[in-house]
Length: 104
Image 1 (spheres, rainbow, N blue to C red):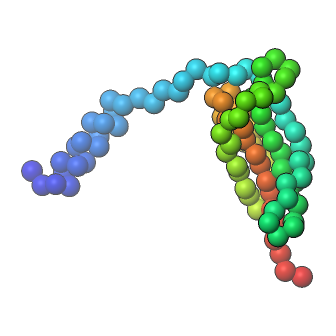
Image 2: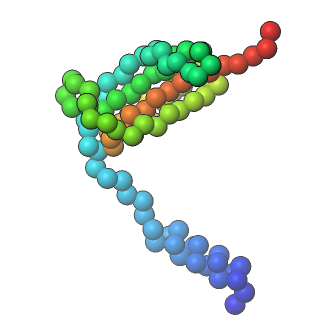
């Protein structure tokens, strides 16, 4: 049996037998801070939205990993909230920055 056929069969077997599972959410709430000004090295300040895990109505105070989402488009895209909610429930802080650049 040649290597390509063997690799294809192995891939097919793994794809049909493996399932992806996620851990149970650790947090039920989310605190959103809009337009938090973040200074950059060159002095520019970017407005970020920060999504934090919450216990009840209080944001989590311990240090947590952050996922930073940078886009040249509008940071208020339809799927931003859903994506942030998933990661926040699993113990991540999510930051969203839109940065548009152009030449005059």
